[in-house]
Length: 55
Image 1: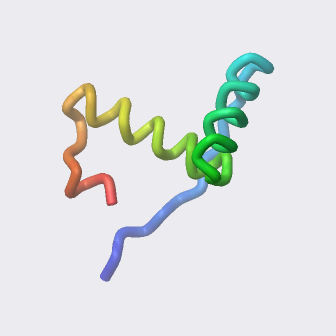
Image 2: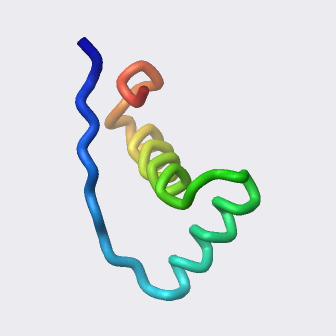
């Protein structure tokens, strides 16, 4: 059985929104996918998750 995914929402200011949109466009990803990628990268950097747990 796979991991359950839950949708979360959060607010960002206009500057952060613009940066997320730009990054997503550069990598041809939906903005939500880019936000998820950035969260995973930050959690990995803090040592809270590993490559295996972030899939």
